[in-house]
Image (cartoon, rainbow, N blue to C red; front, side, top):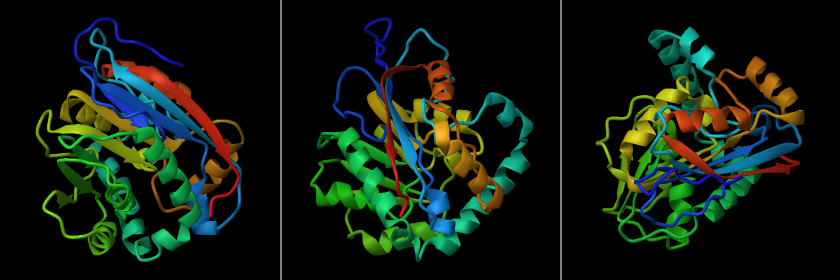
Length: 288
């Protein structure tokens, strides 16, 4: 599905998984959704089928900038967000961070197939970058995306590798080369201290379903993107067969998980000023 802005004023882009990344006067939003059970794979190493969705959006200048991307792995309903006060959100978020602090030494090996597949999709979605691009990897984990950008010689002016888990960040710093155009920050996606319009590309890969206040994250992304900037989102899609493994993961995993269907993102993104330009879903059989 493709949607165009209502007029020629600057728009924002959100991308997930495989969305085009080219600079333009518009802010384009890409959001991709995957029916993926990677958490199950890591904790139980079970094989399941999974489906993925991609949604390409551009900001809608006539809409209220409060919406969520169409993504099955990454969506919080407004009702759920309202039932969590700030202290509850932080407590749930801290549990996820603690889990990944412990998992960080084994993360790349435990999720090898899943990570390879989703990063391939994301790089394809990203497309070309430019030497002037300022990029934020919102939940960078062990720095795999940054590593791929460097390996594939994707040009950028600066890349901020952010993750709330110190263990994951330490793994990223060990993995990545020492470069003046790389910065490491440790912030939750709901509480980003960056400046308005500071980034040209913001990426969220395999993480949106962990955010305890997804609408707050979308507001942050909207504010932090420069005119013509893009937001790329790749995450789980709560549709079809994946509802079963998602429920199992939520029940037995210590992480906070709030997976949403693509339709949720289609409703929420426009509220935050985004117009969906493209949506894609796909299926993959194995997690690891």
